[in-house]
Image (tube, rainbow, N blue to C red; front, side):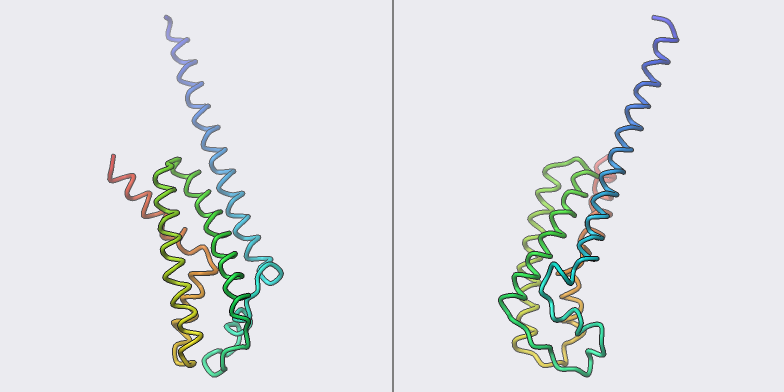
Length: 161
């Protein structure tokens, strides 16, 4: 075989890698835009009376009136919608089913812990725990775990090499 043939194979391999990475970037950008859409349409998609509450001077205001069942299902839907999109991002980035399955398990465990704390706080506490309530709610409604998981999983992958 002559050098030209190996050069062509090398060029073709590099082009395939570049195209694969472009597709990966495209999918990640599309999924991040979906996360942004969830945020942009939050008022029409989800029941959350605490959204307006935390935009005001919530340290001096009583909790807003709320429907507990509606709030639970609204937060659950939002959390798992964000989680599903986040898991898709994790899968696209790492192409690892076991890692995505582990992240799914973490999302479920964190949801159970956070939703329990959230409802305990709004049911049994007064307004002295507003900061805690604010941050627990933030982890339930925003895809913050994605920001924690991606660097952690990337670091883990680097350590395995």
